[in-house]
Length: 210
Image (cartoon, rainbow, N blue to C red):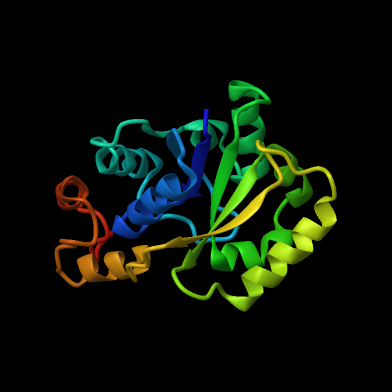
């Protein structure tokens, strides 16, 4: 198996930027599967506006036509703060030691990676695929990559401990932008999948009185 990609987030809502970046990483690393993991209570972000069930539903709708893309409810079932190390420990136990796991991270998140909960343990469980804008990667990412790899020694393997900067298509879309647009009465066409746009409208999500 070439590996499994893991993309976590609040997905409030999941949008085309998430999907395109996941596609680019899956293509670049020849991944066999991609797993989206909605957080229950994000540690580094504001509390989501959509409910747990609504965010799960939007992810399922967004990836419905993608073979081998799935959504995991593990952080939502676990409850409490959503720590990536706990999610990766569960996934590693499920797939065994011989399957590469690639944790997808944005460049900003990666530059602050050493402040994550039990970050050293994360590198024993998974590889890191750092999503960077095509062209010249941010200097901070290059420096963080060098620092972490220097500290890895002989620990890196095919399945965990690698760090790759992966160029992705940057669409300039944010969940905050989408929520604000909906709040002002604009449909999020071409920002989210059509099924997600319909769901947002049907559920009355992100309205001024919500």
